[in-house]
Image (cartoon, rainbow, N blue to C red; front, side):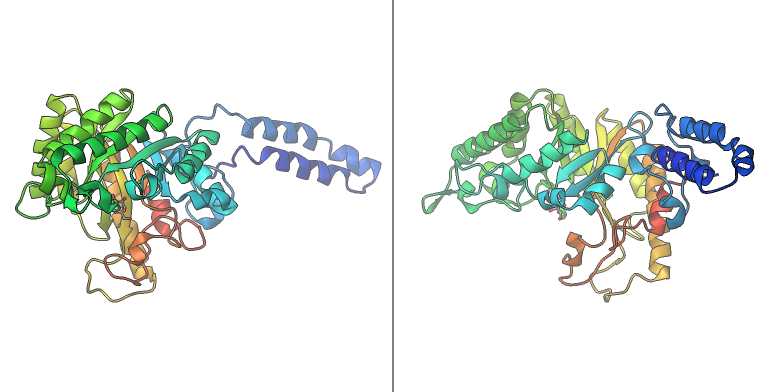
Length: 395
Ligand code: GLA
């Protein structure tokens, strides 16, 4: 049965009063007086703010039912029972009321998709631009949402000056000093406002090497990873510190990440593992997800899915496609499978963040194939829930 939500009591009451007071004979009016206690009862029932989380049988199953209720993802996956539900967004979304409404309905955590990255925050040495990131944080605070910080040390979206000293390559000491200054300044600025940080992003190699051959690694070796976490721990001892990576479910990469986490944990430098979750309609298999989650969980770290999207393409050579019913169905099954796994690991998983709000704005329209339209999220280009949404909340 569909539950009419708390936003409706005033409407219910008013429409019942309108029925009563429309022109009618006195006799007819007296006959309708029974409606008054009924209206009061309806209002009182639907106003109960202490309603328990909406149970499985009362959730909307289609767009029509969705429009009748106000609950969203965060009400079905409550933090106490499941995890925080998050969305990555640019600061411009704050000025878009339709998007704001959708975000407020479904999410209790936000991440800046770009605005906290090094090239935006400190493009020139010593010049920090916090304006856009502050806007997102203020939006989150005004709406009682948590903020996941992303990201402090990465090989992409970083300015070239980090690795230069005049025309020469900077020394390891200089690079590490810049890394520490950046992390300390950014985390101090957001202290008490950002509860978790992706401290190091994508440091592990996809191939046979252990570490990615980044400029960080070329100049500093693996020390930069430890220095980043040490600076982060010192800057805000209350923040939860994450290592974050993609294809973290691939067994070879997973084991390298695991080894790094073991070493970081031995020095109390890490609190959580972030699996980006840039997946697709057939990959990864459930066994890969389960094995990886079990392995990370065995370290006693919290786990977050930090950048979830589910591409409708399984290969770079797939031609562009419209969002056909067949694709929608495959994506629905995939999302259902992934969320089943997340629910199974709810004791270890503390957050799920989608990398984008709706299919009208996704990085996958231009990656890995430029200009190939993708549909990787739970909401369509009109911001309406897709079949995958109804599958995800059906448990
Ligand atoms: C990586 C990064 C994110 C973002 C996505 C693509 O996964 O961690 O910050 O840039 O790529 O948008």
